[in-house]
Image 1 (tube, rainbow, N blue to C red):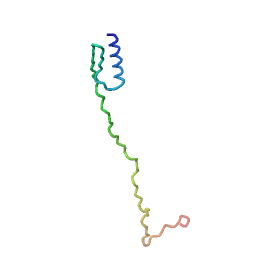
Image 2 (image 1 turned 90 degrees about the horizontal axis):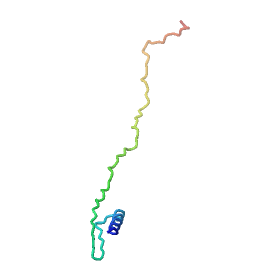
Image 3 (image 1 turned 135 degrees about the vertical axis):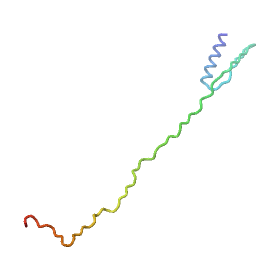
Image 4 (image 1 turned 180 degrees about the vertical axis):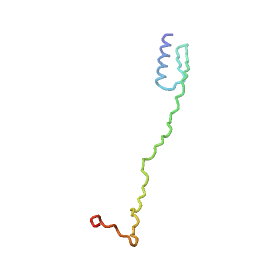
Length: 88
């Protein structure tokens, strides 16, 4: 009986390491034992959600208009600049 338990323990260890097995059957002259193995199904494959990657930063376009020119200044008729201080 001790040998049977050693065989079952060895086969159980091999089943854990090997993969999916449904049952072990040990057959000796005049004696047979079948031990079912209940293994949980493998977990589902985890597929992570897609990750949003923002596009590279691009600064907004800058409108460059024509150069600013102030409006012309016209002297009114009869306007004369004041005389310099030394001429007064």
